[in-house]
Amino acid sequence: MSHKDRHTRWTLTATKSADTIKGTKTTLDLFIEAFGDLPVNQVTGTTAGDFHDLLLALPATHGKSKNRLPIRDAVKSAKEQGLETVSGKTVKNHFSRLSSLWSVLVQREIVAKNPWSQWSLNTTKKTERRCWTDEELSLLTQAQWEHRGISRRTYAGMVNVALYTGLRLGEICNLRCQDIENVQGVACFHIRPHQEDGWSPKSAAGTRLVPIHSQLIQSGIMSFLKPEQHFLFPDLPTSSEGVRGAAFGQAFSKLKTKLDLPAEITFHSFRHTVSTKLRNQNASFRELWIDRVLGHEASHRSQGTINYTSSIDVQNLKSVIEALEFLTFKLDIPER
Image (cartoon, rainbow, N blue to C red; front, side, top):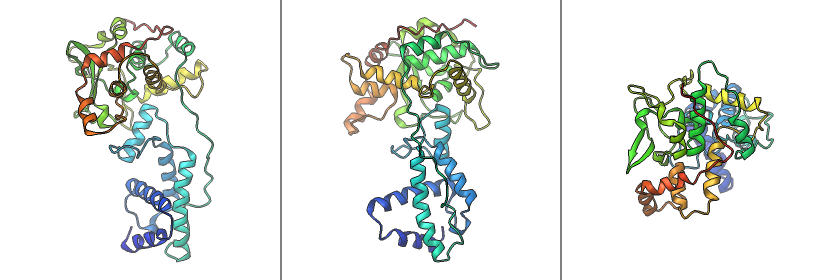
């Protein structure tokens, strides 16, 4: 926006409440990040429509962490991982703020029309995601996996990893053979940035060690390790948008529909299930250990907490992982 546009923008908000000014700044910052610092007379209905679609695809947690991803990377991550996205009500709030600004710009004849007004925005409450029930897990283990390019072996391996680690879909899809390490005598998945692939965890807390559950080892997860093989699950294709595993996510959604599972259940529900099960345990391990395993920002963000979480003994993390038990789930990993 030009100097004149910026002056007008802040003049219009000067008499508003602190909350309104803060909300408007958040909206404008999102818009500028997405489309650049456009002059206001270049913002069209097409631009508003593109912003609408982008907002609806943003993860609901965007902007709530200091280590937030750039807006388009956040959208890609949300799609890849099946994350909950922002509500229609939130999008409506963004449009309302912009419409208020533009209505005054129209009055002052700085622009000819208001591209943010008269949009029909759906504010219906979004489907709340939930954990898998024992019955649904049992149903899943009996399902027939159908995909030409992705084997049942990969499907079984990925679902087992999701349920016994709580890893995000994107983290599982991007596991490399070199990411399985022995640390303090414990086999672990090492979730970390991949410079050669241009992939990284969604936040600093996402870089972590996750011990491999004994049930995973018993099920044969180590058989995926092959000499000279880059990815642990090599038959996962990368989409045209550069998302590895997008095809798996789509195929899993089709399988879920075929099994008549409700909309509240997604692949990301495995992570919800793990988190809920661990936090309901009567075991003696600490909340910080659970956060570390799941790659959550620590609840208490003091410097001492940060130092502590980075040096948690792997044996303690293993005790957290081994607390996971699913009596109705037995999805064998085929040998080939």
